[in-house]
Image 1: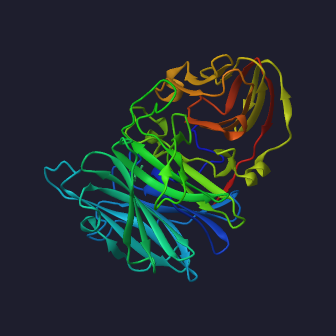
Image 2: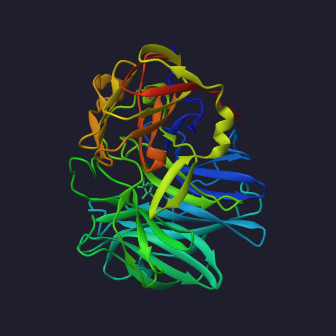
Image 3: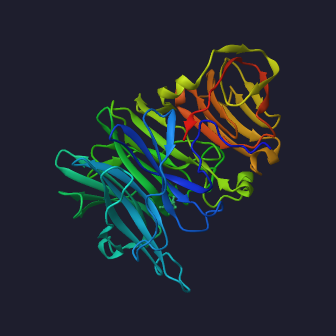
Amino acid sequence: MHNWRQAFHLEPPQGWLNDPNGLCWFQGRYHVFFQYCPTAADGVGPKCWGHYETPDFLHWTFAGVPLHPDTPRDASGVYSGCAVEHDGCLRLYYTGNVKYPGNYDYITAGREGNVICVESPDARTMGPKQLLMTNADYPADCTLHVRDPKVWSTSDGWRMILGARSRADAGRALLYRSADGLAWTLEKIVEKSPAFGYMWECPDCFELDGRQFLSISPQGLPRQETRWQNVYQSGWFPVEGDLADGVLGDFTEWDMGFDFYAPQTFAAPDGRRILIGWMGMPDADYRNPTAELGWQHCLTVPREVELHDGKLYQRPARELDALCGTTYNLPEGETTLTAPFRLTANAENSCKLTLAEGLELSYDKQSGIFAMRFADPALGGGRTVRRACLNPGSDLAMDLWVDTSSVECYLNGGETVLSTRYYPASRDIRVKVRGMKAQYCTMKSMELA
Ligand code: FRU
């Protein structure tokens, strides 16, 4: 039976996966931890950290489940967090989630969001859990929703950023400073005025070419025609100056597709900024048919993030080019291609590409609107359309990375990206091309042990 198992995207062996956590390069390997509920494909069960390792983004090993909710301070879940190397060890920081049984709103009462640190000599064996901060340590005007520590070291110590919701229902990030990575002092509450959503999840701060960027996953943005179309968003602000005293510029979404949330970035040893997102969406009202088979969700491919003319561009990490075979021209009209494959196309006018007779990718040159539409809603688990506004009047360049049950669609050199899961009946995909010059290559699967 066709089971939609992915060929070059990380998914759990069984159970539920959400956010990428603890992304790092350590002891000669990349480590990709992730929010993992091994016992239930619907995610209702103990939330742990799962762990994948790879030397090259091509050969992956599932390295088990190193963190479980097994103390009073993380009893309801080892929630999202990060990893930083320190003195030859790996320090993992995460949110210990605690929900008290009872009749609470779980916003201002009934829960804890604790910052916990664990040291590991090898990324697999975990030392004791050290409690660093509790809700009593956060600013008094925060609700109990404070979580998802991201830590990095600077020339004069350490910094941490946490995602939070204020009592006035404004999303914010809490910036902390520390000399040793264990005792933390609040440096700044980072907010937008007027409020930008009611909660910021999974904040991340990084530098590219000497400029700072703040990435957040905000909740509560009102849905519009060509932006903020999902239940929650993920995107970045340019920071004028330093986050501690700077101003946030305009928000740009990382990915305009149906399935993208809670990304995290890290630095590869050669300095590249790599981003991985969850190719899923919390609280979305659609059915993912793999859940009935025992697992659900996957991560995006590792993406390189680059700064050009003040904008962030994304592309699949160059290591993944090794999965691609010879390139052939794809004629106008219909062809059958076997997934996984990569499809690139250029169009000087409006154009349309249809995959599996139900997923339409179309571009209207005059308005600059690119649409990802499920003409056959069953193919997308019940979803309909997502739109992105590109540059009206301009040509279109598309680079599609098509896996067994997902499409990552990089437009105009990665200036705009749309990702989605989809569920075709087989690996043989009907591809219909109209109004573009297209090429394709077949792809090899990554190796997973
Ligand atoms: C984002 C998120 C995080 C939290 C984690 C729990 O998807 O809600 O804020 O730490 O998932 O799994």
